[in-house]
Amino acid sequence: MKTVVITGSARGFGLCQARKFKELGFNTVISDINEENLEKAAAELANMGAEGTQVLKVKCDVTKIEDVQNLWETAYKAFGGVDIWVNNAGVNSPDKPVCELSAKEIAFILDIDLKGAIYGSKVAFAGMKEQGYGQIYNVEGYGSNDAMMTGLTMYGTAKRAVTYFTRSLAKESHDVTGDKVKVCRLTPGIMITDFIKTANGGATKIELPEKTKKVYNILGDYPETIVDYCVPRMAENTKNDARIMWLTNARAFGRFMTAGFNKRDFFKD
Image: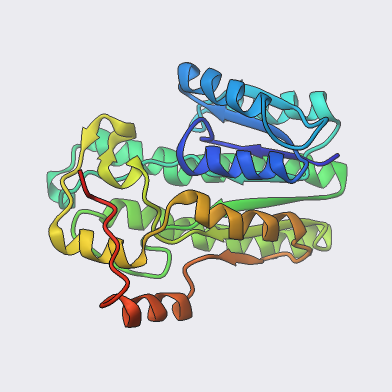
């Protein structure tokens, strides 16, 4: 039986991935910094999924390398290996230009969205190199494709760096492991979760402009829809430097072309 580890998986996109992986027959290791949310998620996952699959919860602050190392060691000890590791933990940026962000807010975004992915990749790569197999997925986001918007500069900076880091690490894996460790990108597109309406780890509310809501209504999807497409492809992937992408250019084009008669409103009270 295969094992997946997902950071930031006590709610939102991470929890949706955990549900789908467990449904597909994976032992599922969830982690989060919020113990209350982690307990609730573990209780839910314990009562679902393929027969015989197990769920393990591990508190982890992805900005602390010792926490990330403990996450790997706990998962490895419990299940004898890790097949897929997803660096999913992330926070949104406050809807403010960079000049109005505090040093603390800037550090918070970079520490979790960039450093967290780097720490997770470093630890998982070392473990997978030793065990001789495995896949690492880093989550792309706004900015990964060089898109720019006032209020998302720091988030986009982190995500653009994650894309470069992931592809460069994939090259390293080719050179160092002969592609035995696959380093890949997960590109979910626009997800309709609390993430888009909050910043600073949920502490700050964001009032989305009507123009932004219009775009989200056209291009956005609930995470359940996205994981139904992406997770099975992650589970079946055999290529290093793969990109599992939901919101392709073709899908986005089709959404805009049909928006006039396919009305959606994710922001109704």
